Amino acid sequence: MDFTFTEEQQAAVEAAKAVFSSVTPDSVPSPALTAGAVAEDFDRALWRKLAESDLLGLTLDPRYGGSGLDPLALCLVLRECGRVLARVPLLESSAAALTVQRYGEAELCAAVLPPAARGELVLTAASSGRTGHGPAELAVQARRNGEGWALEGVQTAVPWAHGAERVLIPAHTGEGRTVLALVPRDHEGVVLDEQISTSGERQAEIRLDGVRLADHEVLAADGAWEWLRDLLTTGTCALALGLGSAVLDLTSSYVSQREQFGFPLATFQAVAVQAADRYIDLRAMEATLWQAAWRLSLAEARPTVNGTLPVAGDVAVAKIWAAEGVRRVVQTAQHLHGGFGAVTDYPLHRYHAWGKQLELSLGSAAAHEEALGELLAAHPLG
Image (cartoon, rainbow, N blue to C red):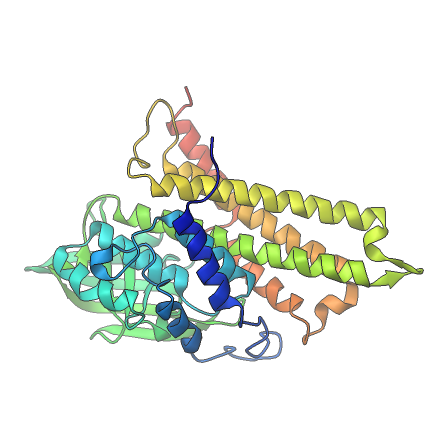
């Protein structure tokens, strides 16, 4: 079998590396030294560069100004994004736009996707529910209201919400169905309260009080929320892989130069064994990530065929490895750096904060282990 990436996917990686080459992890104040958010907005200059490189419409159809690539290509770019802790809503905006393209009506696609591909319209997505625990779709109720919809409820920890023009929000209809509402941030009845993430970025608790939307602004097709959630989770795994790879590189460089008893730390067996274990973690994170992204890229991924688990099973496995792996990589890096790892003008502490944020985003390892167990019980492997 050929596991190499296509020329188009590799070209996307090269374009991403060129854009992110000027980004430094310490380009904003440290979350350890800042009482509030590290910045009021995301990196708009970097966002413009991504738009100029055609990376914001990577997975969108060419008729909307996109490149027509698949979630695998998006995850390759997100890996590079995670390496430098790029402060942009690339995952959320791309995932929301692709979901609109896949499940939205033509009118909505035509209004939203071209400006999103050009970077003129920023999208984000809510996925944490009211408290960060339990199904996110149960935090908001959607009711039919004439020819449109009315929304009531709360979503917490919505990333980049203060800088986005529209938020894709899951909601339940009370009939066992989930819809996705594309809500303008400044819409009547929408209130944003500031929250600060572990990484120091601005998030928002979004309260919806009788928000009314037109019918075409709500994605009511079956499977839309599950698709968005799986894509967001897989993208989070890609960010974690990039972050973990950068941390291991940082650690390898440090222990190769730092000497103890006249010898580099890297020559000590205990140090080498710990670094090797973290390398194995990263390879497992990589393998499970590409499996999940590949399944998402297949049109027939969601059905279960010949005992194969739904794509959610592969996504759960990828998130288990990403959550556990990025935690172990960053903790080992802190241990091997000693006190130097806590110095605030050295980037490791920032990677630690982002790593913890990614570990718990879209569900911890324990939550996905439980979900995987339920899938295995419902779909016995033949």
